[in-house]
Image (cartoon, rainbow, N blue to C red; front, side):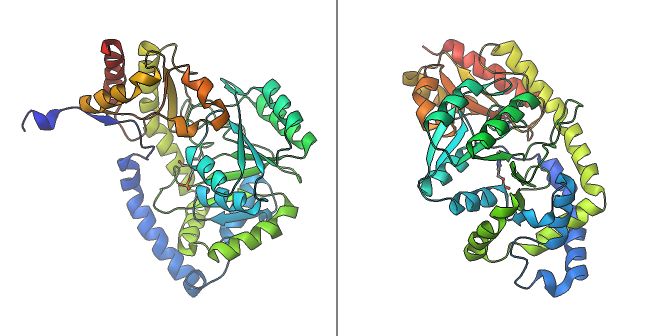
Length: 373
Ligand SMILES: Cc1ncc(COP(=O)(O)O)c(C=O)c1O
């Protein structure tokens, strides 16, 4: 092998599952899809089940202890979030975390909604700031990612999460939690599940990171009186979702193999997460919020990389084999200017890489930061 092919590289940009996890899924998915078609036949090949495949809605309802009529299962988390945004009156005010999933913000803006960011702390939302915002602005929705947040990796404390729910409830704001990383905790602890009552909160989730992005399946749990309205938006946008996928996932869950797969994922991702935490603590102790305990992401603000140096730093990182990008699209528009003062904000992902690669990549970033003129 020539020297060039031995050059190390890592791409911290794409939050994708590890290839080996997907490979492990091949026999499970092949059998699962075949079984689904054989078991349900034309039922999953025909139109129907607009709000999702009934057996899967039942299982999701059971897992969150809600009436399955409140569950809508779609083609991915992003799809159900988008349909939810579509179901709101145009120009609604949506409160988001200071940094959040960039695609949901872009999507909300496309429906003409206004985004208002509220600062994050290492244990959740800055509650004083949230109070101030809700007292000033009539918001329709709060959207947050309480477990292993994308992009910061923080976990809300239970008190903080409940306080957010309480504030929303008092103000008649729909509180929507995107819980797609809840089950991906690698430090040996379990996240405490969110209790759903008649009023909410709304839960949004996805099987993208816990099964596979290719199978594309996600869901939303709504207050009962919102289901009919949202159901119309859903049916008029895409009629039914992908039913063979949903039948496969229902069977995967029912068989108990989904839980086994989750255990496998948590074991697989733990050393990778540890490598990320150790390297960040060693090289960027001031630049990141907390040790992460699961999920797919951590973020850092590289203080020395001021806006004028951003482009050349990203370019030299790329040339050195480290893929990073500025994550300004993930920052709420009203807080971007302020956040820029902390230096280059970037999101790092780790599950698809080996611990050594992660350690090398972080060390390289530090080295480049030090030598940048
Ligand atoms: C917070 C969050 N919500 C939703 C999604 C999208 O999930 P899906 O691929 O099922 O659309 C992701 C994917 O990365 C995510 O990070």
